[in-house]
Image (tube, rainbow, N blue to C red; front, side, top):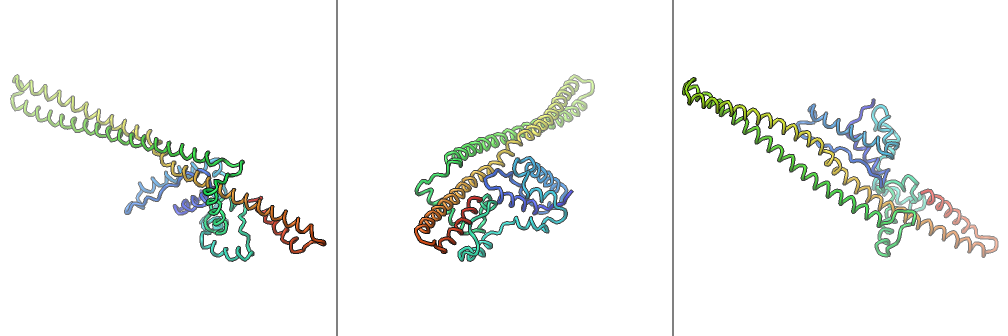
Length: 330
């Protein structure tokens, strides 16, 4: 058993989003801190249940369940912030990108992403990569450049987005209808309860009135009968109110899955948007790979024409070969 604070769960979610671009990632529970209730038993229990459900969803995910991020989160003993590998997974952001940019421009550091970096979501750490992908995205819009055949087409992604948005609209409508139905059931329960209590109070008044008119008088007997009928009717209405409230609670519990699915829709749309960006990354790397391969061919042709070869061109071909290997891996 390990102990984790809520900020650790937030850090886990951020790392999973960064390293698993294009995958559907269950949304983590919101902080939802209500002033004055932060340390209340009820608040702590609600948060504990929500976090447990979140971790169960991650553990059932076909990909995230095998992720290194989740493994460290669940297995590292002690303060997770002291784990070196966990620290390395943190986003470098624009600060790291600005630090690396001069080195990349001077050729001291490659701008070609590693396999893990290419698969992950860009966070500003590699500004040159970001610029190249932005240029590719602009080129796609202007020239309608097609993605490689091995990737899913943009039409397929657009169709998926359309289907998810339509499902989101259906779920939103169903959720609204469910809430309306629950409110109407609550009003029915309130009406039964109010009428029942009023009938019981009236029966007591009638019973007292019957006693004042004489226990054995005809009018007193009639009033007492009315009182008994009112009491029976009121009791049945109170019981019916309790039954309707119980049915309302059970119905609300069954309909909670609609709200759960509706809450997943933003995460699904985010995954599709990131998948679209992943296509741009693949196009950018593929075009850069083709460009460098073409440069190698041209340099080798020029070098072949020169007697004794050209050491400068040979060195350039070797450097391009290293870049090609890195691009193929990416």
